Structures are given as C-alpha cells and as structure tokens.
Length: 283
Image (cartoon, rainbow, N blue to C red; front, side):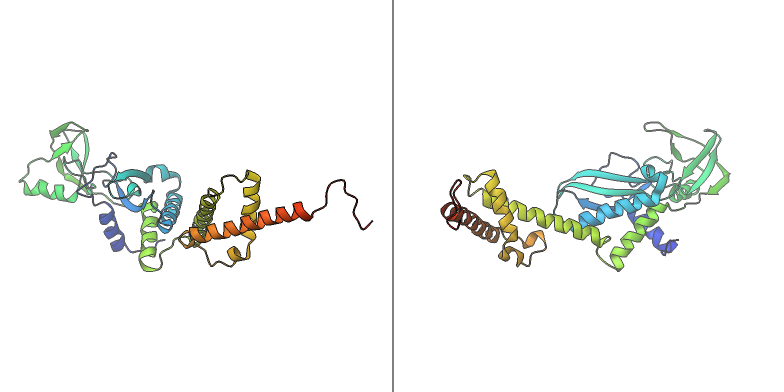
C-alpha cells in the first residue's frame, strides 16, 4: 500500500502524461498511456543521475512484475543539448485506452456503445462533454491509423471507466516523492560503488598518461613501477575519494618517483648483488 494519496497520484499522472510541445516520438504509447518519469543523459558524467536512473528502472520493473515489458519502457532518444537521453516511460493506468476522437491523445474516461460499430467507443472527458455541447452531433472516432469516420453512439449506455494506477507508476511516484522530500540518492551503496569505480578509472588513466613519457620502459617494468606507485607513502596519504579529486600532475610526480626508486633498486642489485657462480667470501 502506497503512502501517497489519490490526489497526489492524479497530479503526478497529469504531469507525466503532458506531452512536450517541441518534441516528436516514435512510439504512440508515449504521453498517451505511458507517462515520462526518470531521465538520464547517458553520455554525461553525472554519477548520481546515472545511479538514480538505473536504480529507479530496476525498482519500477520489479514493481511491475510479469507486466514489466508492457508497463515499463526504457527509451533512448537524441537530444540537441545532451546527446543521448534515456527516459523511463511507465504505463499510468491499468487497461488504459486512448480517446477514440481524432487528434486527441488523452486517455479515455468514459465508454458508450456505438450501433454503427457494434461495440463500445472510449472517449476522454472533454470529448464526451463536446458530444453534448455540439447539440447531439456524433463525435469523430478514430478507427485506425489512417481511417476516420463519423459514427453514432447510444448515450443511454454511458459508463465511466474506472482508472486504476499500475503498480509500476505508483512505485515511480513514490521514488520521485522520496527524492523531492527526503534525499538525493535512491541507493547509496550503488552510488558509492559507481563513484569509487570512477575514481579508480581516473587514477588508472592518469598513470597511463604518465607512462607515455617513458616509452622505452618494458611492459614488465611498467607493471613493477605501477605497483611501487600504489605502495608509496605519498599516494597512500592522499585524501582522494572521487574522480574529480585526481590531479594528473601529482600522479605524474608520484609515478616518476616510483620509477626512480625502481631503477635505483635495480642498479644497486647489479652493483652490489651476488654474481652467479661467485663463491661467497664468508665461507
């Protein structure tokens, strides 16, 4: 049972189903039966947005259960400002149907029988009201993607459709309400793990840049120097925890010192180490 009341959910449903004026969509379900919820600029570097999006997607799909494929759409689209944009669309109502009137993308709220069609016609509240305001004229009804005709309806068969929110939409609304009221992170452990991986990746990239300055070093030597880098007291003493903390100049300095230490040790071994076949003097 959700803690959100019906008034809050209805408001969230209206906002989710409001179609942007300056956008086109390939799927007719979008902003008709499925409302927009969470979004993520996939090519950006906002780890919090990424974590919240993927966490929300998993939880919303989990709430949908066996209906996840039908009720949840993980869409991807091109956007002029941020490149690739992923967005979660969620079916708002159970067994939702679009209004049958042409040029209308609203959800149907009433159903009336049409003798011409031999079955019911689903209309939104506005087009049902227009039916009366038009002085009894029949509404235009969409019969298919490109077929339209004027049909009659039997007003005595009027019935209001019961719109029940899907479990997926309720979960999406709960998650959005949590972010709005209680915090900025849906799954702190997931976010911290992504942040740590990004930090490790930033350090590795900085090390690779430092290694390019010494193109005569062998692969084995680079591995040995890298190990000394991570063991060095200076690196261990750094207060770095996020990718943006990594300073490439500092990494280059520490790597250079580790490289010097590696070759100094190698030189000492060559100068003072035992010679193969030599008899130790202390025997």
